[in-house]
Image (cartoon, rainbow, N blue to C red; front, side, top):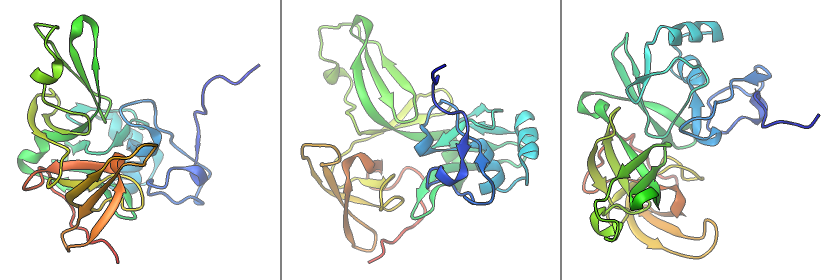
Length: 256
């Protein structure tokens, strides 16, 4: 009988490098289910609660915590220990009244960064694609699996005239109802953070966008807070603000 689908198990030794687990401590770990983020860009709630936040010591204790409904992701209670949490997700621990945003940190992968105040009520999402759907309406496909639909009254009018958002731009949306609160264009002089590659976690001001043909051929030049200029692939750049970042970031300095 032939193989059906992918493996349901995940070996620690071959787990993504962004996972903060000991590779040789045991053989297996929890593999993320299909969800808003891919396996290479996410952590399971099991790893987040047990290994990163260290609210418990075992798999059984983690499942008990989740079963009580004390963990919310983007304002929605999640009880599945294999649920994937990824870039820009807001995680709430209701019993402790603590909030975290998942952000990339240099050489550490994805980590929860404590947040408070109004910042707990919104997140940033990047537009990965724009498509025209049935009856000529416009749909934005976002990096975390969300879709935002704009219903256009006159399909003869170009959607770009009515919806000014472009691919790679960032939207500031409320959670969990997805109301658009702001827009950060992907353009020079705006602030951005690198979400993948060897410069993952570093942030700076976009100085130049150099388009080229081919996979990962287009590059973006950024200037860090210490004046250092560095380049990364265009696909790895995530705008986070214009004059000031819209979210709390961890200060980073690029090593020379």
